[in-house]
Amino acid sequence: MKPFRFRSRKGDVRGGFSLVEATLSLGLMSCGFLILAPLLVMGLTTARLARDDRATAQIAQTLIEEAKQGTLAAGTAYLDLQGNPATSALAVYTAQTTFLPVTGSASLMQMTLRVIPLGAPDRARTYAVVLPASS
Figure: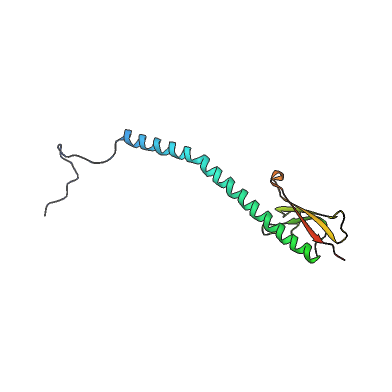
């Protein structure tokens, strides 16, 4: 059995990367990350907008069902992420409800519902529904 040598011979070829190769590879990787960073930001923004659209539609559907049952009053409601009633300090969405009689019909009411994500008033969604007037 031969003893292991720590010294290399003059003719041995050693593997590995040179400093120039390592620098070039790090430069290419950092350029790739800089190119992909805006895509990450755009993806996160799109995910937030999709969450707001889904939540506002779900909140509107819930409030319309409450209006059909006659348990919803006109005014402003503060809601959390799941659409449950919340205090104004903990609210993520506000819902503004108005009821108007339909012209020419005594038995129908028009409900207008505006759901607004807090912090993004430009993303407000408005829903209008015609309901039977409660007696």
